[in-house]
Length: 242
Image (cartoon, rainbow, N blue to C red; front, side, top):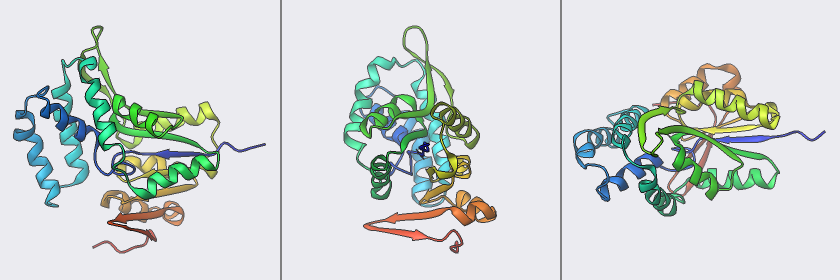
């Protein structure tokens, strides 16, 4: 009997080299759909702290996500869909070469490919279409009867939420986890990496690498990939952190 092997991919920081949500946020400001005050008074400071390596990447994304959610409340989904298309058209190819090639490799092997991402569902949907993956799970931004964003979400960026999303996919597609793969870059992806036989950490954040190091089983089976400039490094999880 043929085994159903899957590859589960996070997007932001794992496939895409930045945050889809952040790219969308900046374009909404550029088109004056969102007040630029939201960026200059809050998000810009968080970005600069991270950019100067004085802040944690995950903390930066969480802060921006909160600002983004407040900014989106009351916006009509239909009005911003064209900007969603622009983000994917112009930024959808700004990805890590290793991860993009792995998506293609998995497809060639006949594996199922899924995205599980904390980015907004309407952005992840378009990325899923672009890379022709079978299914996706993402943070749901809820709308009312008039298609306006309510300011409420069903989040997907934490480890527990991704674990539940994986469980749903596993049951639906009858996935063999021991032979499957998962790709992530932050602690929010830990549950995905723990669940499969072939976990891969892409440019892992310090918190994620620390968790991998302290777990004997995870440390023994995880591949660490660091992509910088035009070089891709494959590292042992025991690599020293400075």
